[in-house]
Image (cartoon, rainbow, N blue to C red; front, side, top):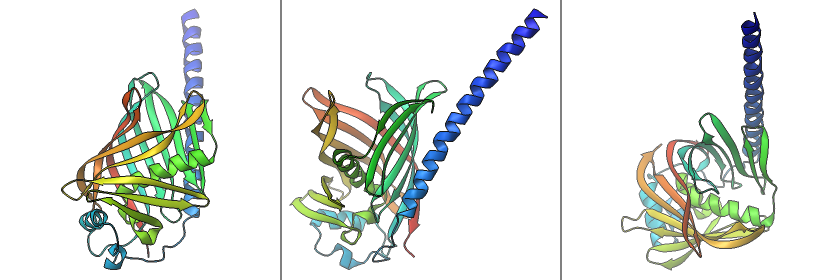
Length: 282
């Protein structure tokens, strides 16, 4: 009888814990879904519906070559994208942990919601959500959806860093890199060019680097990073590789992101694109 009572108590505790965790996961998902709906609600129709040769006129030579290579002719303007990712993320402890993520994007205005789950230990995840919606950037992280460990609201520095990230990830929906979509390109040399983007009072830029094959091989920028409670700009780089066709667009499906710090290069994100879906201009 005593063993039976103990078993009932243990089962009750397990069910209670599972219920709490289930509720926490669903609560996180509801907030993410609401943020994605807000993001989509900000979307405005583009001024053009298809890519034309006029869009490429006047661009720096390596940029025009890149866009001609990755976009079929003709191609509709991409107004939004959903990118599913898988990879590993480096923790402050220097341990690499697996993650799965879905990122939603809009182009006019530029915005995104990145919703990731990092497996800290088997079956226990830290949920991470980064976003730019309506010109405001946020970062949130929670262990199992229960214990919030990061909650950073919008600031000029956070928005700048988030928009630089947006520019680097636009290689997954490259019509966003056309001047008609709000970016400005400046020539640097035969294999690189600088792209700039303005959202409200914030203007950001990043340098794109192109390989001999004409494809974007990487992106660099000076980007804000927290150091001892202070936000300091450090050199930051994105390495792009393994281009494959997705939805008739040539995109890099492998990437690595790293800081270039005084003590050396510090990679912190290595990932692959699992799937891409697009929304198009009418």
